[in-house]
Amino acid sequence: MDKARAGDGDGARRARLLAIGDALQAAAAAADWDRLGELARALAPTLRALAARGPWSAAEGVALQRLRGQHDAAAQALGVATDALGARLEAMYANKEGWLAYATHNETDSGASPQ
Image (cartoon, rainbow, N blue to C red; front, side):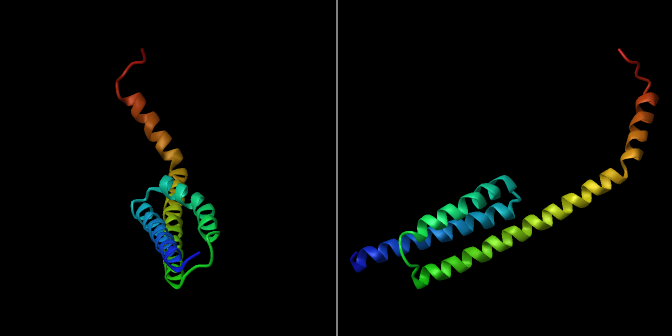
């Protein structure tokens, strides 16, 4: 492979790594967990395919480190959202009897008759 072709491949791989990282970051920032899941599932096969093209250049190594940081940040955002949802579900469960009593009381006091 000549040097010019290797350089072209480096730029394309680097651009792909940057695009993946940016997509992960955007999905996490938007709390688009479905999209984040799709990206995460595609990450390993994509990285394997890119790595199969040959050794990483220094610029690609930097892009890989950036991608790793973005992936870690996205995973952290997901963890925070998961914890928040868990706390909300626990609160809902703890107040379930009160909500049922309130709903039952409002149903009987509304004056509405069953049809």
